[in-house]
Amino acid sequence: MPFLLIQHRMNVAKKNQIYSYINKKTKLFFFVVQNENKETYYIKQLLKHNFDFHLNRCLVSQNYLVIIKLLLKINFIMNLLFQHKFKAILFVGVAYVTYDTFIDTTIELYYKDSPENQNILKNVPSITDRFHPSLWNLSPSIGLTYVNLLEFQMFPQHRREIVQLSDGGEVGLDWVNKDNNNIVIIAHGLTGGGDCNYVKDVLYALHDSGFTAVCFNQRGVGGNKLTTPRYHDPGDPKDLSEVIEIVKKKYPNANLYGIGISIGANLILSYAGTYDCQFKAIVSVSNPYDLVVSIINSKQECHNKLRSWKRFIYLSYITHNFKWLLNKHLDIMKQCIETHGIDIERAFLAETPEEFHEYFTKRLFNYENVNLMMQQHSCIHYLYSIQVPVLCINAKNDPICHSDHIPTIIFKNKPNLILALTKKGGHVEWFESNYPFRIKRWINKPIIQYLTYQKQLNTK
Image (tube, rainbow, N blue to C red; front, side):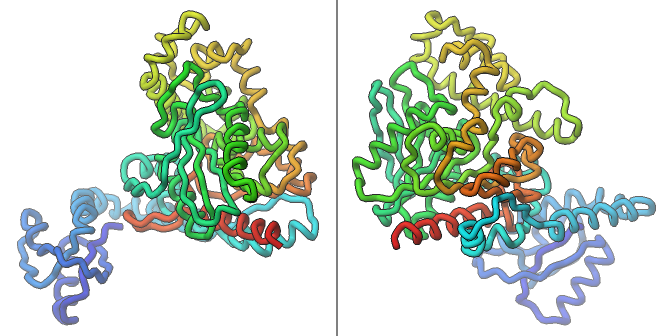
């Protein structure tokens, strides 16, 4: 319902008089809030074109001006909705949202019962408790809107190190140093690196919890220059393996831990299942597991039309970022367009990741077809080979990595794997507060708790 935020600094009689008058005129609901912001405005200045009363002592903080203006604009529409038959619809809607967001918040766990896993669950209480999502997590599309349009960019506090790989390519390492004996390497998502808030958030949370943390920014991503015509390959762990060896050489006595986010989770688990894994433990966040199902089969009709619509939004967003990155590095990529048979025009016209991979990625890396490329890049084939402890966290309403395709049977039979499945959370979001300027990500809690416990085990 519409509401107006009024500061507490006036006497009770005056408040009651104001509440009674405005409620009669506008049918608004009120919440009294305290705010110490020195810069305030008279309500009469804000409402002078709408109402004819004077509230000389009723002050509104600057932080809420935008909210109030928006609520006033929709007040007329809301009053219409409150009439007659719409009341019943509104009541049912509010009841459903309340239940869906604040009551049905259980977290499903999939693991093979063992004393080791029981100890993990005791030391990671955030996954045995409940996840109370923010209103921003009512729908993944709402969360995506918040991330791209409303969320303030976090101030960068890391140090960027440019590292040259064996073939001359360059990657960036974003460091926040604290305990160089316990280092966490973060693998980012498909098109965003250490410049994204979801990476910086966990990076700085790890630093505050006593870890040295470093984000591995792949070739051409996160502000990196592309120095060779070899594009970043989000499914090939070769570059990641080389970066791990560079970190080990720099800090030979350090215990290494890994965090993979979205496609970075797929990458880091593929590494753990195919290489001599140097990590003591891994956290996987929003892992797609099977890229053929999650990304390539985007044209197939989902049995749930709403889910199909949400997937369309996310896949369109991913495709847009693919094309943006290609355009950014087009000058150096021109060197291999003719030699690899890349159809650059059709790549820029692609509407889905599958189309983009068909005309660009598949040809760049010399794969026979897109399905074969994604099959080889999917970590689902390597889960049984992983020997280190892994905590995987996914959300049921993730439009990309949907819960129907998570291999829960593997988690029930593999003693070193644990899956925590929340009802809400979207794709790499998991917002847990409703304040528009102070959103917090719940995902940092289980990450910190799990890695802190693993750190204790490895320092005994």
